[in-house]
Length: 163
Image (tube, helix red, strand yellow):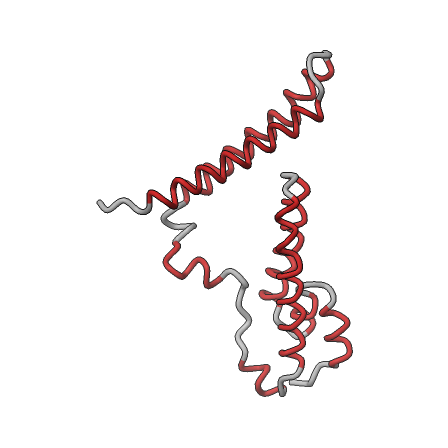
């Protein structure tokens, strides 16, 4: 394997995930890039500015991971496995997809209901002159996010029920 340019690795490292992709770690690069931009989307869509605090963590991880990998010898770099950033999360006994698919279903139902209310019902009520769209839209977002956080907290406190 031909050694990649350290200069270009540093340049690409500025964009989270791009440095990993330049070095040949496509799964890792795409998952880091997706995480970075999903955090931005979630912060804007749900209007939770606290989520923005994750951006420097993701950026620093991606940057320094690229720098470390760019410094490896080509033989060492070939031995590094290209893993998805979240591969360990789903295999570490969380079983989010296989066992807890109801969680994902519940979140999709909540998101779908939110989109219906936010994009259709609220706009129609505003068009008819009944409500102020911005205020109600912000309240709905806050209620849904707060409800999801409270529900998740209750589920975590109650723990797993033994059958």
